[in-house]
Image (cartoon, rainbow, N blue to C red; front, side):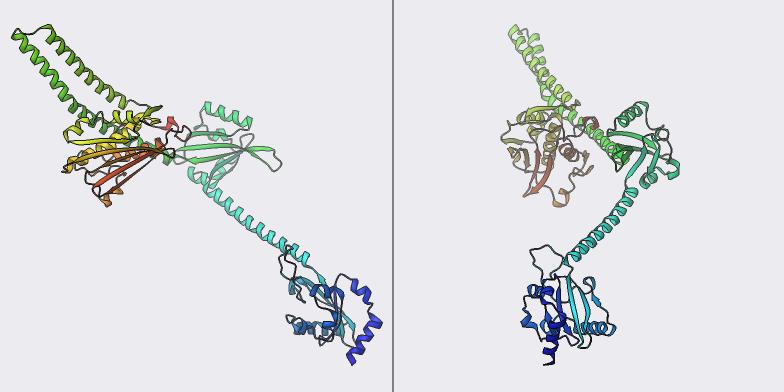
Amino acid sequence: MAQETVKHDIRSLDVDKKIVSSIDNGIVILDDKLNIYYYNRWLEIHTGLKESEVLNRKLDDVFETIKSKTLKRKIKSSLRLQTPTFYTASISKYLIPIEIDQIKISHYSHMQQDVSVVPFDQENSLVALIITDQTNMANTNALLQSNILKIKELNSELIKERQTIDEKVLLIKFDTNFKITDVSKAYLYLLKYEKEDLINNNFFEYHKFSIKKRLKTKIMTHTQEQKVLKYENSILSSDGKSLILLNTLVPEYDAYSYHVGFILFIENATDSKKVIAQQDKLLVTSRSAAMGEMISMIAHQWRQPLSVVNTIIATVRVKQELDILDDSILEKAFTKIEETVGYLSATIDDFRNYFKPNKVITKISIANIVDKSTTFLLGDFKQFDIKFTVLNESNIEIETYQNELIQCVINILKNSVDAFKEKDAEQRNITLLVKEEHSIISLLFEDNAGGIEKSILKKVFEPYFSTKAKNGTGLGLYMTKTIVEEHLNGKITVTSADGKTAVLIELPPRLNYKKEKNENSLPTLPKC
């Protein structure tokens, strides 16, 4: 009954319901026991509860998530001090749970609220809770905090990247007057210099022993035109070590797009050049071994033709002594000798062409490649009773380095021949299956010479690895793999099962000039 009296007093004396209902804030009046005396239209709309449903009920009964003790304490403090107290959204998030329409983009599922606890009627221990929607502000703050966190993370990453660049990337900066303005730690470490040895020095004065006049002119021209320049040069470190450097010179601009100087990015190519030099040595070794094998093959192939010539000459002499030599016999003898000498000459030409340096991409049929490759192996095929068969599309054409591919085919066939020499097989077969599918030409060589043990199979492409008891250089398949994959842009694999060994070479029908390495960087390829 007393509560009804208080409520009547509120409405008649202190609350103009029409005005309060139009305010864009939630207003609820309650006592220090949290009994509700007034509940405005804003709250009705946002909570979905009518004023008639909540009047005379306790606020914490209507909204069970409210922390009653905290709210009662704030009400008593406000009444005692006769001054407002506050909840802030940043601390309490919300007092009355009001779900947000999730169609709207928000960091929160509930309305974020600032709540003012205002003394209303001290005599009846009444306060007004004024609720302000701070969700937009809270979203803005959350987005700002998120961006600040991202910026901190980015700054941290940039610092780490800058440290990494300084410690890992070789670079020199110099201004438009070629005065060195910065040098990375990595460059200083490589050349064994201190930073003060280089900073403020003229770039060309510092490099005067490593940049020749022609290169200096080229650099000057590119810097004047603000163009990127790539070049290679050698330089001595402070401890006298010779280094080979690959350099990329790029213009540097400030935040306003003004040209302020240049950055020289550097790659230490010393070790890679050593690898190339070592590979060149292997190629030379391989060439020498190949020439020895080829001379042996030629000597073997020449025995029969030379024997034929000797037989013809002996026959002519005998008939001459018996005085039965006539012009027709002499003509036949000369013709046979000429044919035999022609064959010997062709063999020498093949040998010379095979070893001739040739880095020109030519169009040739696979059949022609096979014919040229087997020229030096026909004697071995015959001597060891080996049947060599080519299957399918051997007439397809390929644009590639002819001699290099011939070298690979000879290496593979020679390995099969050598395997048959050590195996006692009734039928000795080597087959070559040629296909062209999906812009790939595949050459599949297979022999039945006993196969390769699994433990050995994974080592066949290693340099100097050989299964031959003697006379094996261990370079044949290593050089074949090097040529196929590094020069012919192809792929080579070896498999073995059931006493058979298969070698698969896969090549592009047309060697792409852009993908192929710079021809000037390629050594003269030997034949293995």
